[in-house]
Image (cartoon, rainbow, N blue to C red):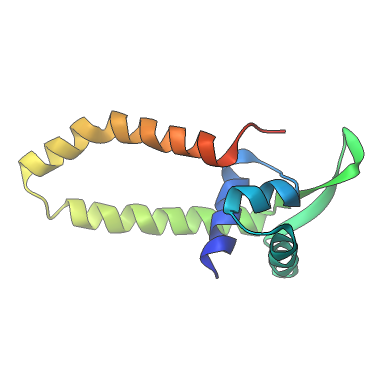
Length: 120
């Protein structure tokens, strides 16, 4: 799976259903490229398109159960990899990481807000 596909699935997992145009902006690709990407992920059963209940002219991309499972499996693999590496650090290095966690969480929140903008 491409990095853009995985990132798009993660965006849908975090923020919920989105328009293709919104996803294109968030992921930094053209709208036609995102349309193709969504079509491929739809054919793979990872996403589906549904009408927007509040605006019948709009189609939203929704994460399917299989798509959510894929995102969760990838995230858990990352957690497991970091846990193995952290186990190899000295105690003072682990303490430094723990002390940095609030600032890192805040950075991640700021990046997410900047990247994804407000929900629609």
